[in-house]
Structure formats: C-alpha cells, structure tokens
Length: 324
Image (cartoon, rainbow, N blue to C red; front, side):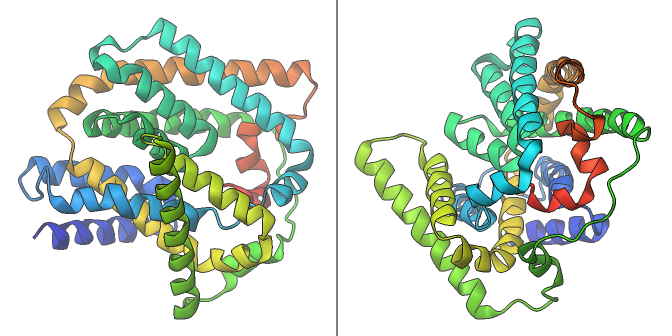
C-alpha cells in the first residue's frame, strides 16, 4: 500500500508540474507525502524509508555530478566566477546575521542545523541541502518545514528579482556545448546499457566512500566523500563520465524525489506548523541581507547588473545548463 501510494503521488506531481525544473517540484512531493502520512494513507515510519536514506540517497549524488569537471566549470563560468563567490559570501553573511537576530529557539538543537542546511541550499541547491541534512542528522519534520518555508520565501524573492531584471535586456541566445545538447536532444529513449553503466559506476563510488568512512571512522561522512570522489573522477576523466550524464541525471531526479517523499511522509504537520513561523522569519532576514549585500558589492566592484549571481538565471538562459 505504501509503495503504490507513494509512487502514485510522485507520478501525479510530475503530471501537475509539467516542464518545471526538477527542484521546483520538491515542495509538491514533500507536501503530498506529508499530508498523506498525517491522514493515515502512508506510514510515518517504514523499513523502506531506511532503505531510501541509506542506499538510494547516496546513489543519486554521483548520478547528478557526472558532469562536474572542475576545469570545465572554471573555463565555462569565466568572469562569472567572481560574482558567484561574492554571492556565496553574501549568503554566508546573511545566514550569520539572520541567526543572530532570529535564533529559532523553538527548534532546539536543530536550529543551527536548519540554518546551515538552508545556507547550503542557497549556494549549491538541493544536493547541498540533502548532504547537510544527512551529515547533521536534522529531524524530518524540521527539514520538511524548512523546505516548505524556503520555497515560499524564494517565490517572493524571485518575484523581486524578476522586477529588477525586467529593467535589463536579456542576453542573446547562444548555442550550448555538445554535452548540454546531448542531454536535451538525445530523444525519449535512453539506452539500457548506458543506464546500467551509470548505476554501476555510482554503486562503485558509493561503496568506495562507505569503505573509506568506515576505515577512518568518519561518522555521517558518506555523502561528502561520495561528492568528493565523483568530482575528482569527473575532473580527471571528463569524457567517460560526461557520456554517462544523459542517462544518470534523469535517474538521479527520480531518486531525489523519492528522498523528499520519505522526508514528507516522516514528518508531522503539527510539528511543521509549530516550527514554520521562526524559520520563515529567519529566511526572510537571511534573503534580505543577502540581496542587500550582493547589490552593494555589485556597485562597489562595478559589476553590470546582468553579471550579478542572482540575475544570471534570468538574464542568460544558456548558462542554466551548467548549474546543478
């Protein structure tokens, strides 16, 4: 019953959201599974959830990062690397200021953990959010509340960015590189051999990380080590790993969806409602400080508005193909 219902919710979320970027429908999956578990449709706890957290989640990380060739990233970003670094600094400062002003005491020991997870998400996306969740052991209800609140704040923030970006003409269309074209133009059929190879490589990387963390006694270090191994491998052997990306990334999207579904199903609506207000205020202060800093630093360094890190995704669509 649990498996059938959960898969039905995942399928329904995909149908409802159509062509949205995959990170947009995390909140749909979390909300649907959270509601279903609190209505008794899904179990709050099940052995399959542990399987997802221990095995499927680490498996998704390499599948997402087969294109993570650091040399290619640096050469592709070019002059945009400095604005990105400034944006990361602004996010870090915004997190510290927001936590000092809104310490989220109602969350207890999870307060600083959710602050760190949200900071990681704003710098590196959902992969960072998931890795920090695993490393710090954040409670599922707090994680679900943080994800829900942050999506609301980001919706308001993006509206403000759209208003500012509307004053700047967009970048002219440009052709993306061969790897990006292969991802979008490879057709609906994925070769079975390539998918099997992607999974095999991902399994091997996860196994190596598990052995190393066990040997050196590193607790909760599997996901960071998996990330490190796959990034190094993709940088040293860029062509073989890039060839696996077109089949690996769609499978990773499904696995990440399953993970967020488990997080939602493990949560409590009452707990989410109790923790959401403080997280909302924290996120609002965080984003406000971040925006003020990047606008101020942009003026200080005389950046053109379209090179600001937060505006890149709106003003230069071709660059979105290199973001994770």
